[in-house]
Structure formats: structure tokens, C-alpha cells
Amino acid sequence: MRDRTRYLYLAVIAAVLLGILVGFIWPDVGKELKPLGTGFVALIKMVIGPIIFCTIVLGVGSVSQAAKVGKVGGLALGYFIAMSTVALVIGLVVGNVIHPGEGLQITDTARQAAEAEAAKGAESGTTVDFLLGVIPDTLVSALTAGSVLQALLVALLAGFALQAMGAKGAPILRGVEHLQRLVFRILAMIMWVAPVGAFGAIAAVVGSTGIEALKSLAIIMVSFYITCLLFVGVVLGPLLWLVARVNLWSLLRYLGREFLLILSTSSSETALPRLIAKMEHLGVSRAVAGITVPTGYSFNLDGTAIYLTMATLFIATATGSPLELGEQIALLLFMMIASKGAAGVTGAGLATLAGGLQAHRPELVDGVGLIVGIDRFMSEARALTNFAGNAVATVLVGTWTGEFDRERAGQVLAGHAPFDEATLLDEDEPAEPEGGEKELAKV
Image 1 (cartoon, one colour):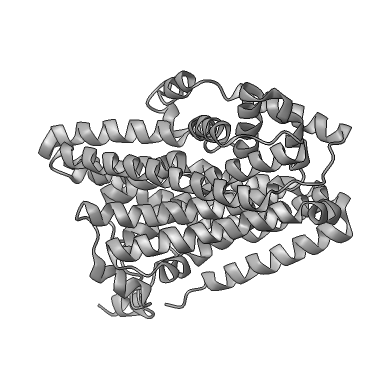
Image 2 (cartoon, helix red, strand yellow):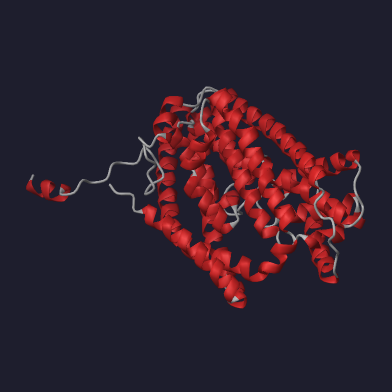
């Protein structure tokens, strides 16, 4: 069967280019198109909760030992903490070498924008609020509230309960499997709206930002993109090869459509359901993919860690208040922890930055206004880096737990086992061959 979705992603590329053109030529029109992008992201978020629930319930419910699930979660969290620390260190080194922010001046408009972001950061709450927020009001609300961690918690509880039920839980597992097929089919249908969403999102960003802001802040933006590329290529690449014997660029090419989706919407959440499906297709077990990917979206924020580091040093230099190394480390560790509570929120990186500065160095908050204009473009690099980090993490955790089929991965990455874009599932029933109905009629 021919893969018709290739035309869909060609349309996404065309829509992105058209959106950039509209944003530059008719900026007011571009701003008005923002609801198109917002609506598409909302459609994707609508199915994230059910997909996480089904995937984890099927993965955990099919595992005979609960300890195996705990091992997966423990390894994943340990790895996330280590990688976030490495990302912070890389951001610190680059920021202290290039000294971004020199020569910029803070305007009244920038101060007002900074005050707004600081207010958002204050609303994100404390660590205790974050932990309590993981608990949903009801079992069902976890699938409708849009919280990845709430859906993860309920799915784990349901999976462990089905484990305890033994054979009596088998009919429920079959029902969840059918529900998963339904939700993935809905997601495949939603993806056909991607060009419209990409067009509206890009046109709005370019229309509201303008080229002047990009010129004046090009140094910090380019430096951030280069740093993210260095982290992915120099840290994640060798680690992936040493542990799993998987080539990073082959993996990234396999996930090319997801990267395009993130680039056009500036939201890594739009690719979360597809990443779970593709990791399973690659050879990672359902339990490992179902636990590692959603958890990584809240705790494995490598791109956000680099962003917080470089943005903090940029603001400190621009305001003429450079930070000592000890101050840099203490402030950034606080921000890294605080960012977990704001995971999944649009503009969470900027709000966390403003909130952290407000709490530790209030005199630096005004500097946040300097990067508000380009934050959307930096948000794309954050999302792409976070996504790449979560893909690599899933393969690594699968390898460490013995739940990764390297032979299967080789076939997939070589193109011998293509991903089913129509169902997003390997186990879906084969399509009816051409002429099948006629043959049946003869019988």
C-alpha cells in the first residue's frame, strides 16, 4: 500500500513557507491566524491522555512482575536527572564563553513584558503544589484535564490493578486494546489538519515578532541553537551508540515527520502520541515506551535546561549585573526543579525563567523583556531538543532493562519495516487486498 501521508508532510512544509511569507508581508493578517495553530495543538492534546492511559495499561497490565515496572521508572528518572545536569553544565560553559547580551538596553515595553512573565512564573506554584497537582480529582478527569502526569498516575494504578486480577483482567485488557486502536485512528485523522495548523502558527509568530527583533537578538538565538545541536550530537549521539549501538542520525531521520510537526507548531506535545507509537514500532517494549516517554515530557527537559542557563547569563550581562559562578549554579538548579511543575504549559520556559529571577534576583527580572520577542523561536529549539532527548532516553532505558529489540530496530531504521501511518499500530489487522470483496462474493 502506498504511503499517502508523504503528501501530507510535503503540504506541511509548503504551509510553513507560506506562513512565513504571510507573516512578513501582512503581519496583521498573520497575527489573526493564530487560532488555526492553537486549534490544531488543542486537537492533538485532546487524545494525549487516552493514548497514554491505553499504552501504559496495556504495557503494565501485561507484565507479570510489578518490580519490572518500578525498575523502568527508577532508571528513567535517574537518567533524566543526569542528563539535565549535563545540559546545565553545557549551557553554563557556552554562556560564560560568548557573554551574550552585551550592548542591549532595556525599554519600558520590555519591562512591561517582563512583569507579565514574572506574574506567570509566580502562578506556577511550589514543588508541593506540583506534587499534589499530579493527583486528579477523579479517575476519569485524569484523561480529560490535559495533564500528562495525571494520566500517567491513573494508568499505572489501573495497570497494577489488572496485574493483580490475573486472568480475570484479560477481557478488560482486550477492551483497552480496542480503545487504543480507536484513539490512534482518531489521531491519524487529526494529522490531516496539520498543514492548516502549521500555517496559522508560523504566520502568527512571524507576524507578531518581526524581523527587527530577530536582528538585534540574533547572537543569543543562534548561540542557543548551536548549543542544542552540540548537546544532541556530542552528548546524546555517542551515548546512544555506546549503550544501544544505534546511530543517532538514523534515529532522528526515522523521527523526521515528528520533528517537522514540532518545528511548525513549537510544541513537542503534538508529537508525544506518535513518539510512543514509533518507539514501540522501533523495538522498545510497550511498558518501557509507555512509561519513559510521558515521564520524560515532564522530567527530561534537556533543551529547557540549556535555555534557562543561557537566558539567565544573557539577562545578567545585558542588565550589567553579572552573576558569580556559585550564584549561577544555585539559581539554575532552582529553575531546573521549578520547570518540572510548569511542564506542558505553553511558554513554560519563559515563565519559569521570570519566576526564578523574581525569587532570587528581582533586579534581573526586567531583562526577561529583552527575549520575549524571540522566545517563540527559541521555544522551537527547546522543543526539538527535548523531543530528541526523550527519544534517545526511551531507547537507552529499553536497552538497560533488556526490553529493546536491536535486530528489529536495525530493520526499521534501514527502511525494511516501514511505520504504518494509517493506524500507528503494528498489530492492526491487514488491509483488505484489492479485489477481496469480489472474491468473497464468488464464494
